[in-house]
Length: 314
Image 1 (cartoon, helix red, strand yellow):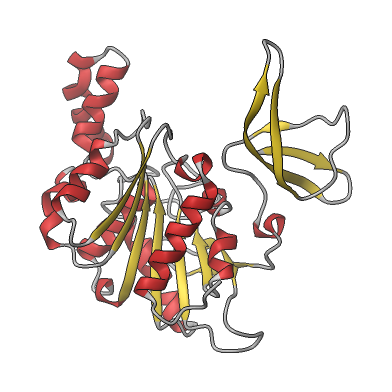
Image 2 (image 1 turned 90 degrees about the vertical axis):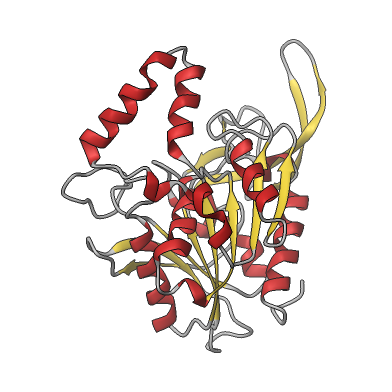
């Protein structure tokens, strides 16, 4: 993606296609869509996620506060439904990544809007702009799932009857923790996981190897427990794979150096009855959509139409 600033409309975006040609100093790509005119000499910045709000993708939205255990969570509400004012009973709730922002969801919100789903994109505890806990640290999904539960309650109070969850990176881990621990898990029709971490002890060892600090892996684990009281067993979702019963759509990039693709493949291989898995060759962390947006969106639509059989066809 490219981003640029305008005086009247704020940040604008354009999505670029595959490389058409390149030299030592230039790269030529096709512009697949753009929100405003680009001119020669325009100062732009590259982005793999995109900034802004749903309005930058042409979606009317509301900033809402979702009551949660540590205070109101800021959230984007994009209303769906068959017609303005009609009951909105099909919802999707989206959860961002570790130290991420709601902007994680901007790439895919238009797809949910095309399906007629109302989307709620939350900001969970200790993230930027969200309520803080007394310790002010992440618990790697061991407690953050309570905020997702609060979002499900909010959606149900607003008339939601069928709910799909989508999580990005740690947001996907939070989604799995919700399925493990929440009494509302049985009300979820399906979950979509993008680049999920399923077990954190192995991630600590992975980063220790990556940065040539292997002898310190045990120390980092001990320090994390000391600092936050982290319960690593509570976020070992690999250990309870046999307990899950909710249909899952899973995306993971083969070139992910943040969460190795083996995390996803272990889940996919253990539960082929439950998991529809898409390994995206060459994709880095949280970038499966960027490699082939059309394929990603088509797989997502197909999954939603399977778990919500009479959802809008588009």
